[in-house]
Amino acid sequence: MIRDTGTNQPLSALDTWLTKLEKQHPNAIDLGLDRVKTVAQRAGLDQLDSFIITIAGTNGKGSSVEMLQSILLAAGYSVGAYTSPHLLHFNERIMLNRQPVSDEEICSAFAWIEAQRHNISLTYFEFATLAAAYIFKQQSCQVVLLEVGLGGRLDAVNIYDADIALITSIGLDHTEWLGDSRELIGREKAGIARAGKPLICADPNPPATIAKVAEETSALLMLAGHDFCYEMRPDGGWSWSSLRQTFTNLSELTLPGQHQYQNAAGVLQVICAMAEMLPVSEAAIRQGLVNTTISGRLQVIPGVFDTLLDVAHNQDSVQQLGTFLHDYNQKRKGRVLAVFSALSDKDINALVSPVHAYVDQWFLAPLKSQRAMPLETLSNGIEAVVQAQARDKIPSRPLVISCDTIAQAWSKACSDACAGDLVVVYGSFITVAEVLKLAL
Image 1 (cartoon, rainbow, N blue to C red):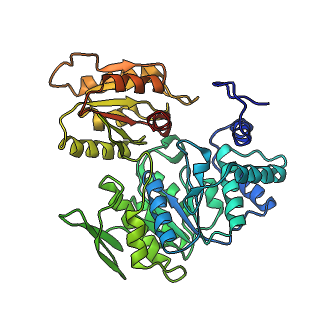
Image 2: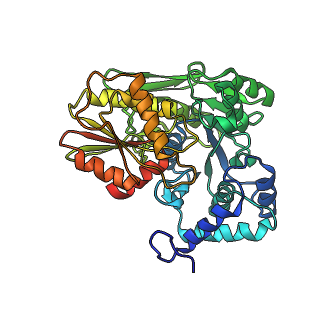
Image 3: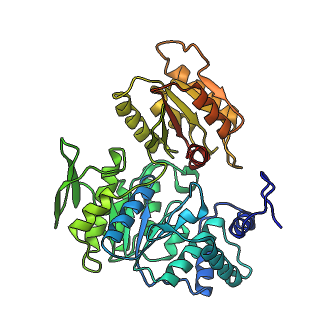
C-alpha cells in the first residue's frame, strides 16, 4: 500500500495513479506528438465526435475556458473542458458541464490508456490529456474545450483538430521551450490552427507570426481590433461588435481585472464563429458571462484584512496584478503584505518589479516542487529590485521575511496583518494552491 510521505496515510486510488504517472516518464516536459498520437490511435481516442475548441495563449486561457463553458451551458449544450494545472484537486482538470469528474471515472480512463500504451512512455500531461479524451468520448459531449498546456504546436492536445482555435494573448513565458521572443512564441501557439477553420486572436497587438502561420495553414484568421472589438462604458458596462454582429449594454464582468474584457472579446468571437453549427442566443451569452467565476485569478477573500489570491506567474500577468493593486489602493489605506514564491525557470525581476511599489512587506518560502526557486534566489531577487527602485523611506521592520514553507509564510503574514491591510498571494499556481487550502 502506497502512503502519503507527509501524513503517512494510505493514498487514494487516484493519488496512487498520479504518483505513478509523475515518475513514469524521464522528463516532466517532453514536447512532441508522435508518442501520444500513437497511444491515442491504439486506444481508439484519435478522433472525438465533438465540436472542438482549442485554447492557447500566455495568459487568459483558464478564464476564457470558464466563460465558454458558462455560455455554452446556458445555451443548453453538453460541454467537456480540459484545463491545467489544477489548484486543489486533479479532478478540476477534467470537467463535465462545469463539474469535476469523479475519481472513479479518471481511474478507469487511466487503466484503459495504461493497457493500450504497451512500451510507449507518456508524460503526466499526455496521460491526463488522453484520460480527458476518453471521458469526453464516453460522455458524448457536444462541445469539447481543450486548453493547451505549453505552447501549442507540439502540445498533446494538438493531436486533435480544432474546429475553432483561440489564442488569448502572447507574452514571454517558458522561453526555454518556446523561444525568447513574442514572434517565436506566437508561431508555436498558432500551431493549433487548422485549414479552413477560424483562428481567433484576442491579443490586441499580435506578433506577425500569427498571420504568417494562418496563411501557411490556410486558417481563417480573425483579429482583435480588426475583425472584432469591444468598448467600455462609463458605468462599467461594455459593448462588443464584429463584422457581422453587435452586442450592446453588456453587464460588467464578474471576473475582476480590465484584461478580462480582452478575454471576453475573444470568447464572443468564438461563439459567433460557431453560430452556423451550434447557435447561441444573446440571452445565453449575457447569462453565461455574468455567471462566470474562476478561483485564483485576482480572487479577493474579504475579512478583517482582505486576501488576494492570484496565480500570476509571468511578466504580463504580474503587470495585470500591479494594475489591480493600483486601483485597489485607491479604495483603501492599509498596507500590502505579499506571500510570494515561484518556480526556478521564472524571471524573478519580471515577477517583482511590476508590483514592488505597492508591497510593504514580503513573506517568502520555497515551493514543494523539484522546480522550486531557492529561497536565497527569491530573497536576493527582491533585494535587487529594492536597490534598483529605492523606496522613499526605510521600513521599520525587515522588508523581506524568509520562511520554511508557504504555510508558515501565510501564517506569519496573517499574524502581522492589521484591519484594512491586504495580503496578496501570488507567483505560481502552487503558491496559491497552498494558501487556498488554508484560507477556505
